[in-house]
Length: 398
Image (cartoon, rainbow, N blue to C red; front, side, top):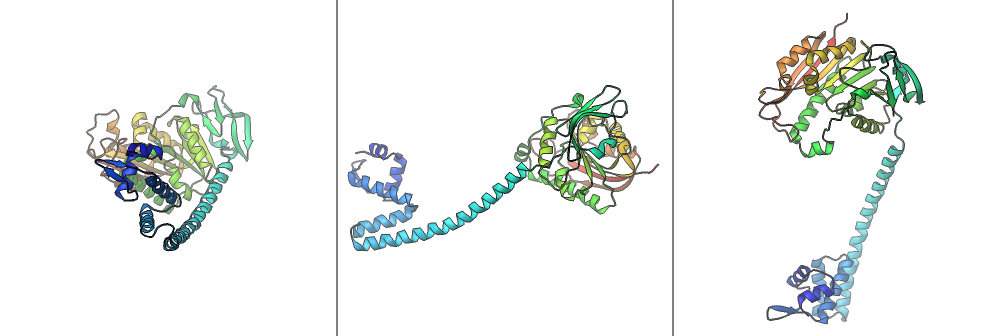
């Protein structure tokens, strides 16, 4: 039979048959330009397939078949030779089995560990003791909590009622202002990673590490910490190993789904359970004045440009206790050639001038950059010399 029929009979490709012919695993005769395959060739192919099931490589199969052709598979010499191949393959597979068993045991342990974490997520909600830090953002009136569901001294659901009828609600431990909910359509971490230069990501990480080191080195009270960030939780997930057990960390995000996802991730960190999740506009938070010990203003140049730098800086500063600390990482362009709304706010001089309008004593200031590479989500980074301004200050006591 010809090569096509032979391949079809044994359910393999013509290319595979040709490859076996090239390796002389098959020794079909040629009739002119065409190969002719016999029953002997079918027996050889069945033997090749059987040896492959025994995990012999094609090189090993070639040696076995060559010796068989020399000594015949009925001869004692071939049987002894083949026995040596079988014993060696058995030792090889047993060695791999031990290694695979060890890996499988490790994987099973990891599966159990992750499964336990997913089954035992921390219950996260509004700590009851933090209620006195809240105030109506519209009339500055007091809240009354109704229909509250409480677990482990945390409010999981309920309503925060105010006399001005600007009522808020708590859902799954998140305080929500329905008027503020907005979808940001930001890329996922995977999308951002795949389309952003590692140098740019490492540049951002270096700035965060700088601020974390300053906070840890300085005498900073941390009872209540507020993070305002372009990407909620970006700073927190790097800072959480250093977060004191008794600190209450406040997270602000208008994209409710992103906030829910962050809350779920934080539920895996069993060593910390004191958070306030706010789905609110950034400059209209339900927090009392002089209630925050440390403000983290991270990569929010775009938010400042949207709201107005002076306005947002002054509002955030009003939340800070006298003597409280203010840490900021602000993006700016040394060259501002982009034709984009709000680009004038990506300016070091403007940032410094806005910071000077609030009542802070400078403790530390540093410029980092420019970064050498960007990515799809960071156009104009290189030509406009994207840099970071790192600021750390203390609010002057009245």
